Length: 393
Image (cartoon, rainbow, N blue to C red; front, side):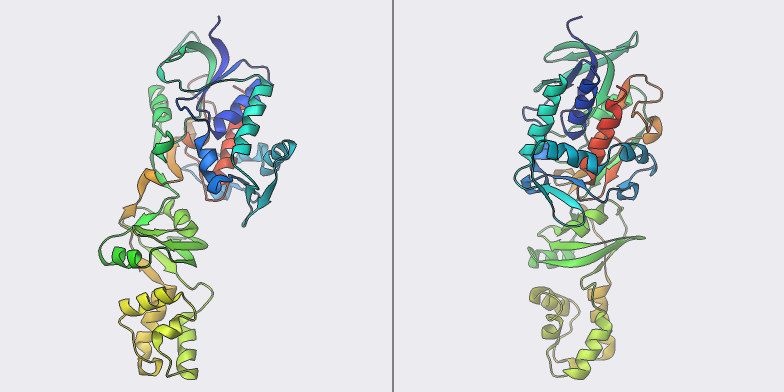
């Protein structure tokens, strides 16, 4: 059969490419299909164009899922050191930026070229600009009707990602395949995404747009300590993106804008040692001047320290160390780095990524309900899940 393949993989992103490499290595006749004209766009744009390709500190606790233990098997079998070895095999220079985040010294295109070279070496065939119009299963084979011809395969791997960043081709295709074959879905939503606000709080964010500080951001029992950025829509920056994956509509978040300073004690000390200092100027010793002025305006706290009652100073301190705010929403999939939710992991084997009740059907990467923190973890999940499926598909 001319159009028969042992394995067809739909989606030529990080997980799909890794899976194709591994099935090809095993001698499986492999076809990799993608609807886009450009390959692996999410890799290309990641890390400011330098691809944050993994994180040295990857562990199951860095991932969100309805089944937190599901990712353990794949992550243990393909670790950051394994991908680093592949990167170094291809002579790609890399560096650690911070918190275990690894980036290419030059360009994310190097990672794409590396994966394509590995696919070619493994004999996997790549076909872009191909739209799948129908998938059927009969006689233990999958039959695909596509804009580039009809194909048949024994194993079908879905690596089509989630809904984030639609401008580079994100679609719900993988979710539709899961539904077609009766797999349960965890409702998808935007993750690692800026938070938006309304009314007076939005106006404050607009006035401070472009200003960034190191902060801790808490939602429930989860806290992240990284940069925070004010924008014309609300709040962004790593700490906000991280907490957005945990935040649910109607919840408050707590922001500490000076995590290294007990502002209540500091302001009391300043009042004793420098009573004639203007309050905004005092606050500006800890915070950027524009932010200090904004907080003083919002708290109606002006004049000299000596003129300010201790109770009002404590309110000012709380506005810095314990700023409680309720987002109105997120910027959505347009700017979200990942999609939370997806194919329910209870439907899949954690060892092989194969659907338990549908032989030969595999789901890998972002389409699955496994979502990493910011900082290279989602790529490591793509490599690990693609590798796991590639050993069995």
